[in-house]
Image (cartoon, rainbow, N blue to C red; front, side, top):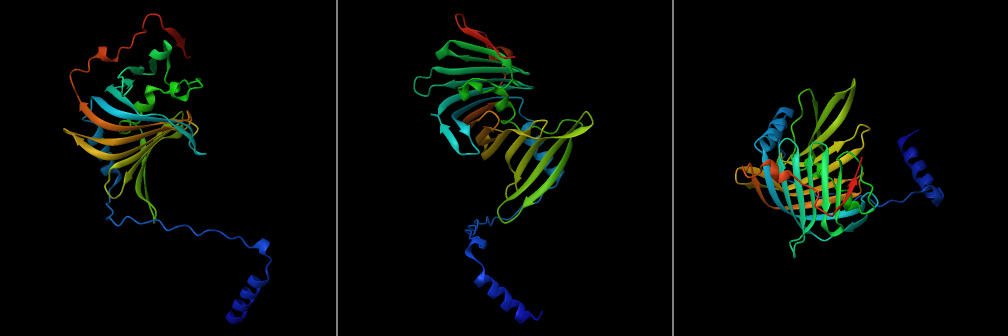
Length: 284
């Protein structure tokens, strides 16, 4: 068919087609591009960056404002709670203690401790003391009472791959984003499993996001990092947003101060004993 005749046919069809066969849509609003120059890095470069950030930290005490939210983050039905003061203690390999304090009265709202897969939680206002496993999903109707130390343990630090892990690198750069994605894969019982994704901003090569996954590929945790700041000799994110989609809560941390590798963080700082007169609840 001659080109002129084809063009005329298309125009005629467009004019006579019934409106029910025409779909109108709003054109996407162009995303403002970041005109900063892109930086290039190899997989080995990014792994070295993770080691440089994490390896020097053997322990820390973090003072932070903690802003919790609960709800379904996919549908947008979210409830924000008041910001509280928080103190987070950490010592390798997996000891952690988190205290939430009333910012005005400075009284304890909750006290959590974790070692390995065991955790303890004390809620003074309810005379409630909980013992259980980090991998046991909480059943409390109050979503914040299902908060676990493992949410912080898997988010505050970006760990290098373990020996035997496989790593893959994707350059996810287009008109809307510019990131490297480092995928950490592990073989379990002869099957490859995606463990984590670490995202690096190609404008700075700083980590901006980390995801962890369960055995079925579902996302268990997502952390977003911003405002990387030098605290003494330690480079640490000043803002950390922790999201736990399977537990329907998130916590945003605004770091006020961090003290790393202090000899004061002795084992007794992570011991949380049941106070007399409190009700014990065991999660199995």
